[in-house]
Length: 205
View 1 (cartoon, rainbow, N blue to C red):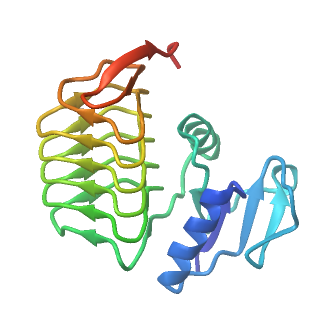
View 2 (tube, rainbow, N blue to C red):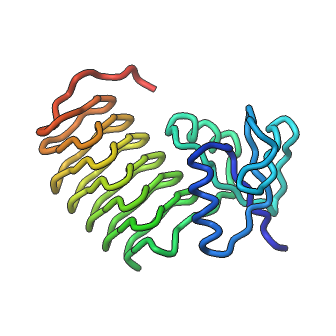
């Protein structure tokens, strides 16, 4: 039976996911949203989540940029997730990617890198050899992880940020745009600047 591919979340990030899928000639049948602002998005019908029921043949990508909300929706849906990888992304045959993950154009994922479930590897982001990126991470455009970096669950690394080799970044941390990370970052920390400095710690999620 043919899989029926749908997206959950009619956001700006959803537009990116649609573009990636269409680059692979994959058809999105519809988009589900808890609070839809329009009936169509890029020519694709948007339906309210109250009108939606899952079928075994359906495959989904949670097309929401916010890591916390993406995790909640993925847990609610439970399974049947699809990958979205743009044709202009470069991914080593020795890298691994978890279900529900989105890889944008120009992204590079190098040898023996491991990407978890429901991650966003955004435009021109670089994940070097032997990196471990856990579930629900968002790597923003033009950020770069050098070799052997570990990024914990739910962390958001901002646009243009750089992380030197061998660094560990904890779970649900936030790395600000353009930050340069030269030492380990604890869970829930918010880090900005060059060199990266912790400015606060978020509450446990």
